[in-house]
Amino acid sequence: MNENEIFNFLSLLGDESAKVTMSNFRSDFKTFNKNTGTIKLDPVTEADRQSELLIRELIAKEFPDHSIIGEEYEDIEGDPKYKWYIDPIDGTKSFISGIPLWGTLVGLEIDGIPEFGLIDNPATNERYIGSNRASYKIINNLKKKIRSSDQRDITNLRFGYTSDEMFDTENTKRTLNAINEKVALTRTGGDCYFYGLLASGYLDLILENQLKPFDIIPIVPIIKGAGGIITNWKGDDQYKDGNIIASSNQDIHNQIINIIEKVSK
Image (cartoon, rainbow, N blue to C red; front, top):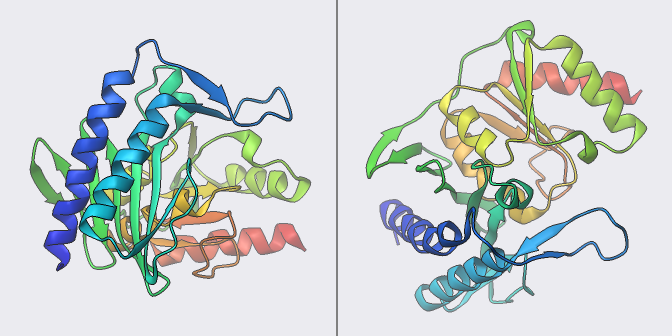
């Protein structure tokens, strides 16, 4: 498949998944707690499971030899050259609360490099697809190329992250506080929705911690294709550490890494 064919396939996955998720959103559905050891809620819904099964089936039908890694089910070990990553509902806490900022993530990694990604936000009718070469926003079947912002002044940055509870060590708390003291404004609770905003130029910086590969791999091509930078906190292209910086440009990225290094000393 060429790039356009992969994009079309990702859009198909988004369309089919949305039929499942949107039929459950703001309705009466079952929720389970995966975090059985404590009272802290790590929710999963029937919609998560049904959506991931459907996406897995579609990928396996089109690419029967490819590997598949998802949040809710065991990995399928196929050709290690091609690995699909699935998060059927990124932002399940928002989903069960009726907040429309959740989304479906699908990414294709080729030879260890995240090459193609989908962020589908069906509740807001927004879809982002991208490769390392270009990224697009799709609304009502209209595809528009997107670019991240050119903001280079850290004091003017629009900063986002998911939640304070993800920064649960003294070092990560200090890092978050140090960045918050520098930027112009901070918003939280956006999950994958924030990455579409950064790729479109509405946010300038995202910092995350405790992410899983299926949270990260799908968003990498979209950020890069829009001209942004995404690495771990050390500035490396190693996306499976769980900590992520996504910046609108290299200048901002370098400034954030400098802050992290100073805090860690």
